[in-house]
Image (cartoon, rainbow, N blue to C red; front, side):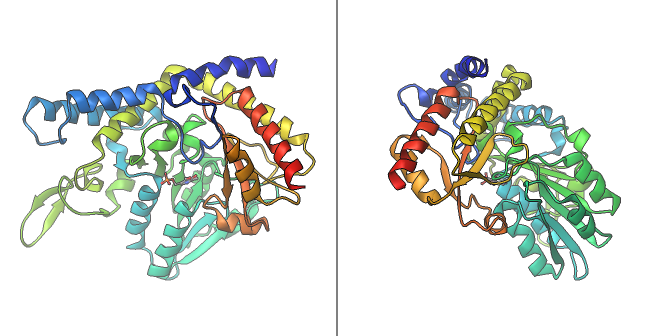
Length: 403
Ligand code: PLP
Protein backbone atom coordinates (compact mmCIF):
# COMPACT_ATOMS: atom_id res chain seq x y z
CA UNK A 1 0.00 0.00 0.00
CA UNK A 2 2.72 2.39 1.06
CA UNK A 3 4.71 1.72 -2.08
CA UNK A 4 1.83 2.41 -4.38
CA UNK A 5 1.07 5.61 -2.51
CA UNK A 6 4.64 6.83 -2.93
CA UNK A 7 4.55 5.73 -6.54
CA UNK A 8 1.51 7.91 -7.00
CA UNK A 9 3.16 10.87 -5.27
CA UNK A 10 6.08 10.38 -7.66
CA UNK A 11 3.91 12.50 -9.94
CA UNK A 12 5.55 15.61 -8.41
CA UNK A 13 8.78 14.77 -10.20
CA UNK A 14 7.35 15.97 -13.51
CA UNK A 15 7.11 19.49 -12.02
CA UNK A 16 10.92 19.66 -11.90
CA UNK A 17 12.51 20.04 -15.35
CA UNK A 18 15.95 18.93 -14.16
CA UNK A 19 14.68 15.35 -13.88
CA UNK A 20 13.38 15.19 -17.46
CA UNK A 21 16.53 13.83 -19.09
CA UNK A 22 18.41 12.10 -16.33
CA UNK A 23 18.37 9.01 -14.21
CA UNK A 24 19.85 10.98 -11.29
CA UNK A 25 18.45 10.10 -7.88
CA UNK A 26 18.57 13.27 -5.83
CA UNK A 27 18.53 12.57 -2.09
CA UNK A 28 20.18 15.83 -1.03
CA UNK A 29 17.30 18.25 -0.60
CA UNK A 30 18.52 19.20 2.89
CA UNK A 31 21.54 20.78 1.19
CA UNK A 32 19.47 22.45 -1.51
CA UNK A 33 16.19 21.65 -3.23
CA UNK A 34 15.66 21.34 -6.98
CA UNK A 35 13.48 23.99 -8.62
CA UNK A 36 10.00 23.45 -10.05
CA UNK A 37 9.13 24.86 -13.48
CA UNK A 38 6.85 27.39 -11.74
CA UNK A 39 9.90 29.05 -10.14
CA UNK A 40 12.00 29.01 -13.31
CA UNK A 41 9.07 30.45 -15.32
CA UNK A 42 8.40 33.23 -12.79
CA UNK A 43 12.03 34.38 -12.80
CA UNK A 44 12.30 34.12 -16.59
CA UNK A 45 9.07 36.07 -17.07
CA UNK A 46 10.20 38.73 -14.59
CA UNK A 47 13.51 39.31 -16.40
CA UNK A 48 11.82 39.28 -19.80
CA UNK A 49 8.87 41.53 -19.02
CA UNK A 50 9.26 43.74 -15.97
CA UNK A 51 12.86 43.95 -14.86
CA UNK A 52 14.10 47.09 -13.16
CA UNK A 53 15.46 48.09 -9.79
CA UNK A 54 12.83 48.33 -7.05
CA UNK A 55 11.45 51.27 -5.05
CA UNK A 56 11.76 54.94 -6.05
CA UNK A 57 11.66 54.40 -9.85
CA UNK A 58 8.92 56.17 -11.83
CA UNK A 59 8.67 54.12 -15.02
CA UNK A 60 6.26 51.24 -15.56
CA UNK A 61 8.98 48.60 -15.27
CA UNK A 62 10.16 50.02 -11.94
CA UNK A 63 6.59 50.01 -10.66
CA UNK A 64 6.04 46.45 -11.89
CA UNK A 65 9.33 45.25 -10.36
CA UNK A 66 8.50 46.88 -7.02
CA UNK A 67 5.04 45.32 -7.12
CA UNK A 68 6.50 41.88 -7.88
CA UNK A 69 9.12 42.18 -5.12
CA UNK A 70 6.60 43.30 -2.52
CA UNK A 71 4.08 40.67 -3.67
CA UNK A 72 6.79 38.05 -3.03
CA UNK A 73 7.20 39.45 0.48
CA UNK A 74 3.45 39.09 1.00
CA UNK A 75 3.48 35.49 -0.33
CA UNK A 76 6.26 34.55 2.06
CA UNK A 77 4.50 36.32 4.94
CA UNK A 78 1.25 34.45 4.24
CA UNK A 79 3.16 31.17 4.08
CA UNK A 80 4.26 31.51 7.72
CA UNK A 81 1.20 33.53 8.86
CA UNK A 82 3.14 36.76 9.39
CA UNK A 83 2.62 40.37 8.31
CA UNK A 84 4.62 41.45 5.28
CA UNK A 85 6.14 44.28 7.35
CA UNK A 86 7.77 41.61 9.51
CA UNK A 87 9.54 39.86 6.63
CA UNK A 88 13.11 40.94 5.86
CA UNK A 89 14.69 39.54 2.72
CA UNK A 90 18.26 38.40 3.39
CA UNK A 91 20.79 36.42 1.37
CA UNK A 92 19.80 33.26 3.22
CA UNK A 93 19.48 31.70 6.66
CA UNK A 94 23.17 32.20 7.43
CA UNK A 95 22.95 35.88 6.53
CA UNK A 96 19.82 36.26 8.67
CA UNK A 97 21.41 34.64 11.75
CA UNK A 98 24.48 36.86 11.31
CA UNK A 99 22.21 39.90 11.04
CA UNK A 100 20.55 39.09 14.37
CA UNK A 101 23.73 37.97 16.12
CA UNK A 102 25.65 41.10 15.03
CA UNK A 103 22.81 43.28 16.30
CA UNK A 104 22.42 41.43 19.60
CA UNK A 105 26.21 41.42 20.12
CA UNK A 106 26.01 45.20 20.49
CA UNK A 107 23.92 44.88 23.65
CA UNK A 108 25.40 41.67 25.12
CA UNK A 109 27.87 42.18 27.97
CA UNK A 110 29.90 40.04 30.37
CA UNK A 111 27.55 38.17 32.68
CA UNK A 112 24.93 37.74 29.92
CA UNK A 113 24.45 34.32 28.36
CA UNK A 114 23.52 32.96 24.96
CA UNK A 115 22.01 29.47 24.83
CA UNK A 116 22.08 27.24 21.77
CA UNK A 117 22.07 23.43 21.36
CA UNK A 118 24.81 21.01 20.38
CA UNK A 119 22.69 20.02 17.36
CA UNK A 120 22.99 23.42 15.65
CA UNK A 121 24.19 23.84 12.10
CA UNK A 122 27.36 25.99 12.07
CA UNK A 123 25.17 28.80 10.68
CA UNK A 124 23.38 28.99 14.04
CA UNK A 125 26.44 28.10 16.11
CA UNK A 126 29.44 30.14 14.97
CA UNK A 127 27.71 33.57 14.78
CA UNK A 128 26.60 33.19 18.43
CA UNK A 129 29.95 31.84 19.57
CA UNK A 130 31.63 34.84 17.93
CA UNK A 131 29.07 37.29 19.37
CA UNK A 132 29.92 35.92 22.83
CA UNK A 133 33.66 36.14 22.24
CA UNK A 134 33.24 39.73 21.09
CA UNK A 135 30.92 40.87 23.87
CA UNK A 136 32.26 38.83 26.78
CA UNK A 137 28.90 37.04 27.17
CA UNK A 138 28.94 33.33 28.09
CA UNK A 139 28.23 30.76 25.40
CA UNK A 140 26.00 27.97 26.74
CA UNK A 141 25.30 24.81 24.78
CA UNK A 142 22.41 22.53 25.69
CA UNK A 143 22.92 18.80 25.21
CA UNK A 144 20.85 16.31 23.30
CA UNK A 145 19.77 12.85 24.42
CA UNK A 146 21.15 9.71 22.73
CA UNK A 147 17.87 9.61 20.78
CA UNK A 148 18.78 12.96 19.20
CA UNK A 149 16.06 14.87 21.03
CA UNK A 150 16.93 18.03 22.90
CA UNK A 151 17.78 17.30 26.53
CA UNK A 152 15.04 19.47 27.98
CA UNK A 153 16.37 19.08 31.54
CA UNK A 154 19.81 20.34 30.49
CA UNK A 155 18.18 23.11 28.46
CA UNK A 156 16.11 24.14 31.51
CA UNK A 157 19.23 24.12 33.73
CA UNK A 158 21.12 26.35 31.32
CA UNK A 159 18.22 28.75 30.74
CA UNK A 160 18.44 31.37 33.48
CA UNK A 161 17.63 35.06 33.96
CA UNK A 162 21.17 35.67 32.65
CA UNK A 163 20.15 34.20 29.27
CA UNK A 164 19.59 37.03 26.80
CA UNK A 165 19.27 34.98 23.63
CA UNK A 166 18.23 31.43 22.81
CA UNK A 167 19.05 30.31 19.26
CA UNK A 168 17.85 26.88 18.33
CA UNK A 169 17.10 24.77 15.31
CA UNK A 170 13.54 23.83 14.51
CA UNK A 171 14.53 20.76 12.50
CA UNK A 172 18.06 19.38 12.73
CA UNK A 173 19.77 18.92 9.36
CA UNK A 174 21.44 15.75 10.69
CA UNK A 175 19.09 14.16 13.20
CA UNK A 176 15.84 15.06 11.47
CA UNK A 177 14.43 15.80 14.91
CA UNK A 178 11.78 18.49 15.11
CA UNK A 179 11.95 20.70 18.19
CA UNK A 180 8.82 22.13 19.77
CA UNK A 181 9.48 25.75 18.80
CA UNK A 182 6.43 27.10 20.64
CA UNK A 183 7.36 25.40 23.92
CA UNK A 184 10.99 26.55 23.64
CA UNK A 185 9.77 30.08 22.95
CA UNK A 186 7.57 30.03 26.06
CA UNK A 187 10.56 28.86 28.15
CA UNK A 188 12.86 31.55 26.71
CA UNK A 189 10.29 34.28 27.25
CA UNK A 190 9.71 33.14 30.84
CA UNK A 191 13.27 34.26 31.66
CA UNK A 192 13.05 37.38 29.48
CA UNK A 193 15.30 36.04 26.70
CA UNK A 194 14.83 36.62 22.98
CA UNK A 195 14.60 33.47 20.88
CA UNK A 196 15.67 32.80 17.31
CA UNK A 197 14.32 29.72 15.55
CA UNK A 198 16.43 28.32 12.72
CA UNK A 199 13.79 27.07 10.30
CA UNK A 200 16.24 26.45 7.42
CA UNK A 201 15.28 22.76 7.32
CA UNK A 202 11.71 22.79 8.60
CA UNK A 203 10.39 25.47 6.25
CA UNK A 204 9.86 23.12 3.28
CA UNK A 205 8.68 20.13 5.31
CA UNK A 206 6.34 21.20 8.11
CA UNK A 207 3.72 23.95 8.16
CA UNK A 208 4.91 26.93 10.18
CA UNK A 209 2.76 29.47 11.97
CA UNK A 210 4.79 32.20 13.65
CA UNK A 211 1.68 33.35 15.55
CA UNK A 212 1.57 29.96 17.28
CA UNK A 213 5.33 29.79 17.82
CA UNK A 214 5.54 33.36 19.13
CA UNK A 215 9.32 33.59 18.58
CA UNK A 216 11.29 36.83 18.21
CA UNK A 217 13.19 35.76 15.11
CA UNK A 218 12.83 32.97 12.58
CA UNK A 219 15.17 32.44 9.66
CA UNK A 220 15.24 30.33 6.52
CA UNK A 221 16.75 30.14 3.03
CA UNK A 222 14.87 30.25 -0.26
CA UNK A 223 16.94 27.54 -1.92
CA UNK A 224 15.85 24.83 0.52
CA UNK A 225 12.23 25.82 -0.13
CA UNK A 226 12.39 25.00 -3.86
CA UNK A 227 13.26 28.65 -4.56
CA UNK A 228 16.47 30.20 -5.90
CA UNK A 229 19.77 30.65 -4.11
CA UNK A 230 20.77 34.09 -2.86
CA UNK A 231 17.54 34.92 -1.06
CA UNK A 232 16.33 34.08 2.42
CA UNK A 233 14.14 35.42 5.14
CA UNK A 234 14.38 36.89 8.59
CA UNK A 235 11.00 37.07 10.28
CA UNK A 236 10.56 39.11 13.44
CA UNK A 237 7.58 40.76 15.10
CA UNK A 238 7.60 44.58 15.02
CA UNK A 239 9.17 45.14 18.45
CA UNK A 240 11.99 42.62 17.89
CA UNK A 241 12.92 44.17 14.53
CA UNK A 242 12.55 47.72 15.87
CA UNK A 243 14.98 46.98 18.71
CA UNK A 244 17.59 45.41 16.46
CA UNK A 245 20.18 47.79 14.99
CA UNK A 246 20.76 47.68 11.21
CA UNK A 247 23.31 45.19 9.97
CA UNK A 248 24.54 46.96 6.86
CA UNK A 249 24.37 50.56 5.77
CA UNK A 250 23.69 52.13 2.38
CA UNK A 251 20.88 52.93 -0.01
CA UNK A 252 17.24 52.02 0.62
CA UNK A 253 17.65 51.54 4.40
CA UNK A 254 17.65 55.22 5.37
CA UNK A 255 15.04 57.82 6.20
CA UNK A 256 17.30 60.90 6.12
CA UNK A 257 21.01 61.30 5.42
CA UNK A 258 23.05 64.41 6.27
CA UNK A 259 26.76 64.97 6.76
CA UNK A 260 26.43 64.80 10.53
CA UNK A 261 23.98 61.93 10.94
CA UNK A 262 21.69 59.37 9.33
CA UNK A 263 18.28 58.21 10.47
CA UNK A 264 17.14 54.78 9.43
CA UNK A 265 13.96 53.56 7.76
CA UNK A 266 11.62 51.23 9.64
CA UNK A 267 11.92 47.47 9.20
CA UNK A 268 12.02 45.69 6.85
CA UNK A 269 13.77 48.41 4.77
CA UNK A 270 16.18 49.10 7.66
CA UNK A 271 17.75 45.66 7.06
CA UNK A 272 17.71 45.67 3.26
CA UNK A 273 20.60 47.99 2.37
CA UNK A 274 21.46 48.20 -1.31
CA UNK A 275 19.80 46.61 -4.31
CA UNK A 276 18.08 43.48 -3.05
CA UNK A 277 17.79 40.07 -4.72
CA UNK A 278 14.79 41.07 -6.79
CA UNK A 279 14.31 38.21 -9.23
CA UNK A 280 15.30 35.76 -6.50
CA UNK A 281 12.56 37.11 -4.24
CA UNK A 282 10.11 36.74 -7.13
CA UNK A 283 11.29 33.14 -7.54
CA UNK A 284 10.84 32.50 -3.84
CA UNK A 285 7.31 33.90 -4.01
CA UNK A 286 6.61 31.48 -6.86
CA UNK A 287 8.06 28.57 -4.86
CA UNK A 288 5.68 29.33 -2.02
CA UNK A 289 2.83 29.50 -4.53
CA UNK A 290 3.82 26.08 -5.89
CA UNK A 291 3.77 24.53 -2.40
CA UNK A 292 0.45 26.21 -1.60
CA UNK A 293 -1.09 24.67 -4.70
CA UNK A 294 0.01 21.19 -3.60
CA UNK A 295 -1.04 21.78 0.01
CA UNK A 296 0.49 20.65 3.29
CA UNK A 297 -1.65 17.52 3.54
CA UNK A 298 -0.13 16.04 0.40
CA UNK A 299 3.38 17.29 1.20
CA UNK A 300 3.28 15.76 4.68
CA UNK A 301 1.78 12.46 3.51
CA UNK A 302 4.35 12.15 0.74
CA UNK A 303 7.29 12.77 3.06
CA UNK A 304 5.98 10.60 5.88
CA UNK A 305 5.60 7.69 3.49
CA UNK A 306 9.07 8.20 2.04
CA UNK A 307 10.51 8.35 5.55
CA UNK A 308 8.68 5.23 6.70
CA UNK A 309 9.75 3.29 3.64
CA UNK A 310 13.40 4.42 3.75
CA UNK A 311 13.72 3.67 7.47
CA UNK A 312 12.20 0.22 6.98
CA UNK A 313 14.62 -0.56 4.16
CA UNK A 314 17.64 0.76 6.11
CA UNK A 315 16.57 -1.29 9.13
CA UNK A 316 17.10 -4.44 7.04
CA UNK A 317 20.83 -3.65 6.82
CA UNK A 318 22.42 -4.63 10.15
CA UNK A 319 25.54 -2.46 9.64
CA UNK A 320 23.49 0.76 9.48
CA UNK A 321 23.76 3.01 12.55
CA UNK A 322 21.33 5.92 12.53
CA UNK A 323 22.35 9.28 13.95
CA UNK A 324 19.72 9.40 16.69
CA UNK A 325 16.71 7.15 16.96
CA UNK A 326 13.97 9.71 17.65
CA UNK A 327 11.21 10.34 15.13
CA UNK A 328 12.64 11.92 12.00
CA UNK A 329 11.38 14.35 9.39
CA UNK A 330 12.80 14.46 5.86
CA UNK A 331 16.43 13.72 6.89
CA UNK A 332 18.22 10.45 7.75
CA UNK A 333 21.92 10.51 8.64
CA UNK A 334 23.72 7.24 9.30
CA UNK A 335 27.06 5.49 9.41
CA UNK A 336 27.89 1.93 8.36
CA UNK A 337 29.94 -0.34 10.61
CA UNK A 338 33.37 -0.82 9.08
CA UNK A 339 32.87 1.50 6.08
CA UNK A 340 33.81 5.19 5.98
CA UNK A 341 31.02 7.65 5.13
CA UNK A 342 33.18 9.09 2.31
CA UNK A 343 33.37 5.64 0.71
CA UNK A 344 29.56 5.34 0.83
CA UNK A 345 29.24 8.71 -0.86
CA UNK A 346 31.76 7.78 -3.53
CA UNK A 347 30.03 4.53 -4.43
CA UNK A 348 26.58 6.13 -4.54
CA UNK A 349 27.86 9.10 -6.52
CA UNK A 350 29.28 6.76 -9.17
CA UNK A 351 25.78 5.37 -9.56
CA UNK A 352 24.18 8.79 -9.98
CA UNK A 353 22.73 8.81 -6.50
CA UNK A 354 23.28 12.15 -4.77
CA UNK A 355 23.65 11.87 -1.02
CA UNK A 356 25.80 13.99 1.27
CA UNK A 357 28.69 12.73 3.37
CA UNK A 358 30.75 14.58 5.94
CA UNK A 359 29.87 16.58 9.03
CA UNK A 360 27.00 18.46 7.35
CA UNK A 361 28.17 21.73 8.96
CA UNK A 362 27.49 20.20 12.36
CA UNK A 363 30.94 19.30 13.70
CA UNK A 364 30.06 19.69 17.39
CA UNK A 365 27.09 17.34 16.90
CA UNK A 366 29.22 14.70 15.21
CA UNK A 367 31.83 15.03 17.96
CA UNK A 368 29.02 14.54 20.50
CA UNK A 369 28.14 11.25 18.79
CA UNK A 370 31.82 10.32 18.57
CA UNK A 371 31.69 10.15 14.78
CA UNK A 372 33.76 12.24 12.38
CA UNK A 373 31.31 12.00 9.53
CA UNK A 374 28.04 10.46 8.44
CA UNK A 375 26.12 9.85 5.22
CA UNK A 376 22.83 11.68 4.86
CA UNK A 377 19.82 11.19 2.65
CA UNK A 378 17.09 13.81 2.59
CA UNK A 379 13.80 13.97 0.75
CA UNK A 380 12.02 16.39 -1.52
CA UNK A 381 8.73 16.37 -3.38
CA UNK A 382 10.39 14.82 -6.44
CA UNK A 383 11.51 11.66 -4.62
CA UNK A 384 9.59 8.42 -4.89
CA UNK A 385 9.84 4.79 -3.84
CA UNK A 386 11.98 3.95 -6.88
CA UNK A 387 14.60 6.47 -5.69
CA UNK A 388 14.83 4.72 -2.34
CA UNK A 389 15.00 1.30 -4.00
CA UNK A 390 17.92 2.42 -6.18
CA UNK A 391 19.65 3.99 -3.19
CA UNK A 392 19.30 0.84 -1.08
CA UNK A 393 20.44 -1.44 -3.93
CA UNK A 394 23.51 0.74 -4.56
CA UNK A 395 24.27 0.89 -0.85
CA UNK A 396 24.17 -2.92 -0.58
CA UNK A 397 26.36 -3.28 -3.65
CA UNK A 398 28.85 -0.74 -2.25
CA UNK A 399 28.96 -2.58 1.06
CA UNK A 400 29.86 -5.82 -0.72
CA UNK A 401 32.63 -3.95 -2.55
CA UNK A 402 34.17 -2.43 0.59
CA UNK A 403 33.92 -5.52 2.80
N1 PLP B 1 20.50 25.97 9.44
C1 PLP B 1 20.31 24.69 9.08
C2 PLP B 1 19.59 23.76 10.02
C3 PLP B 1 20.75 24.25 7.84
O1 PLP B 1 20.56 22.98 7.48
C4 PLP B 1 21.41 25.16 6.98
C5 PLP B 1 21.94 24.71 5.69
O2 PLP B 1 22.17 23.55 5.46
C6 PLP B 1 21.56 26.48 7.41
C7 PLP B 1 21.10 26.85 8.64
C8 PLP B 1 22.24 27.50 6.55
O3 PLP B 1 21.53 27.71 5.38
P1 PLP B 1 22.20 28.54 4.20
O4 PLP B 1 23.50 27.88 3.86
O5 PLP B 1 21.20 28.46 3.10
O6 PLP B 1 22.39 29.94 4.70
